[in-house]
Length: 64
Image (cartoon, rainbow, N blue to C red; front, side, top):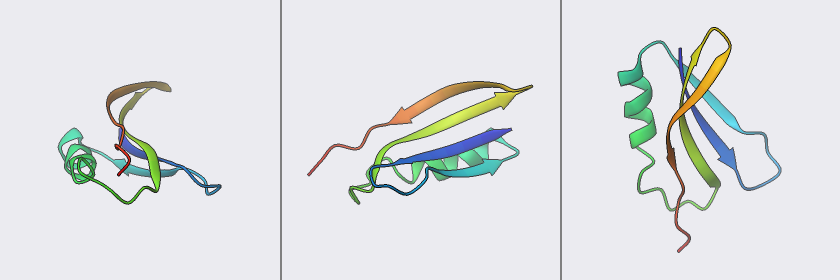
């Protein structure tokens, strides 16, 4: 299972989106490479197998 996690800067909970394939998760993740919304402190592409979680990639948006 793959997840895209959006770690928010505000008081709202982090957002998680689950995918059954890495390709689908990576497509969603890549859409935020140039995000300038200033909502997220980071976006993570995560693989989870048998309760072991591994972060595959992280995007840390640069402030404007």
